[in-house]
Image (cartoon, rainbow, N blue to C red; front, side, top):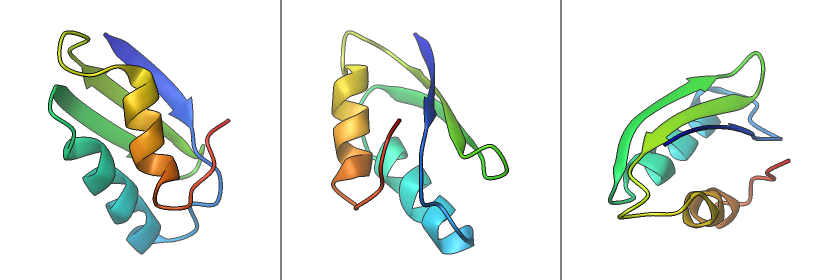
Length: 67
């Protein structure tokens, strides 16, 4: 499954690194690409291991807002 999520309040490279790490640490995530200009993350994952809601929760736990 491939999803694009909009992430607010990513301001610098440290924020991008934190979000990428939070996404990648989830079992079942195959790929993650973050576009800081658009504030979006393109995520490829296996729905048998993880749901999009769980990925979103791992980002929100860091204090970022998902639209």
